[in-house]
Image 1 (cartoon, rainbow, N blue to C red):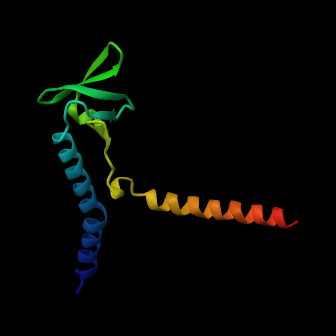
Image 2: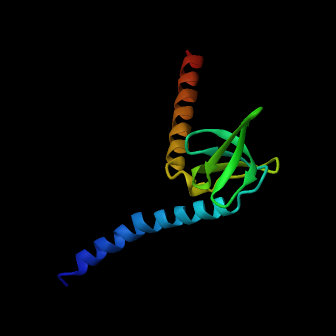
Image 3: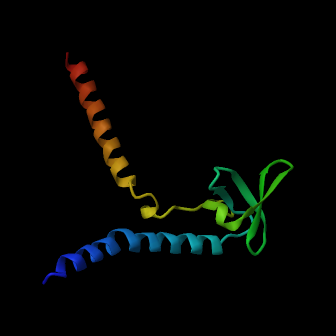
Length: 121
């Protein structure tokens, strides 16, 4: 009985911290493995470009006319489009996304209420 709180704390940390991080890392690895020439990507440095050549651990990006950069595959953060079609990001990619959307809805509702009050006067 003395170890039950310790076990519960350990289970909480696994479920709340470790498991989601492992899932995110797995998604990142699969995204990097699926890179193809022609994909439009964003790097961790915020550079937008199109993949023109793939190597084992590197990619060549066309970032402007006549400007090509060789970068590590691990530097690719997001795939924007694949063969001209938009790639949808997973819903859990940004954990605070729901909170931001909820806050935006509240702000929109407050703006509508304020507009109604000024329109009634």
